[in-house]
Amino acid sequence: MTIQHARGRRRASGPATEPRLPEAFSADRPRDAQREARRRRGPFRQVADFAAASGVGQKAGVALAATGLLLTVTVPATSPVMATGEQGSTSASLASPAQPKVSAEAAAKVDFSRTAVSTQGDPDGKLKQLLSAQSAGSVSRQASTGSLGSPLETLVKSSPFGYRVSPITGGAGEFHRGQDFAAQCGTSVLAAASGKVTFAGWHPYGGGNRVVINHGNGLETTYNHLSSSSVQVGQKVNRGDVVALSGTTGASTGCHLHFEVMVNGEVVDPAVWL
Ligand SMILES: [Zn+2]
View (cartoon, protein in one colour):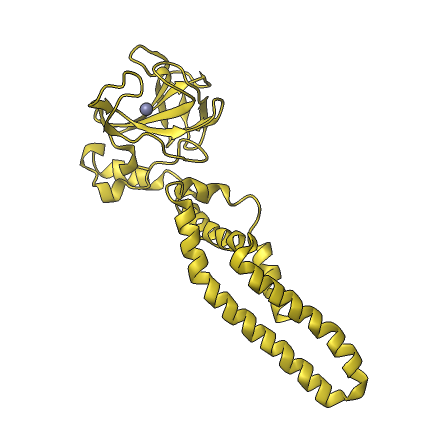
């Protein structure tokens, strides 16, 4: 009984809708994180399983002793089923996909709840608080981290901010003004925070179709290489609103989102704000 309860609850606590978010935040090293979780969980679960299995054995023994021959037919008929079922899942958990799935769901819960804290109620609260107290330029890296929302539902980092070899010219020392995220063309692009659209159109310097949102106090975000945009200059947007669809317009070698964060007109590493 203990076993069935525990496993039932674990299954129920991992709704199918959750795992998308954690992917977004652990996109860098999803496998390592899961392996770590699995390693930590493995022995613990085995102990729990063993304890539970022992409990079943004891109960069966007690039942046998108390009720005598009549139940020797009934109890062994149920307990071997539980015992073999549990043994099966224990040994299978070391090799089969069953165990990684459980640990992924557990990790999913951790990330999800952390996200929920910053996005429930007023999702812009932290950013507004930061920017009301000071210009974006004087916000510390520590304070700014996590204050912008994800520009895509699932963030898979590709080319980072900073100097790199140009994917267009092959030349070294090109300064990459934003963070690239892998995204199929046509993926919804989301406003990283509330603000006002200050540009929506063709960027003459390689950005292709581009949207710029001003969040106030010197903070702007830009979204580039879009296949289309659904906002107009002057429009107010809220964090998480779909402002465009990703694409590969302008100086781009394939479908992706080039995301920029600007502080007082200068690009900064988006990783500092996401
Ligand atoms: Zn880029």
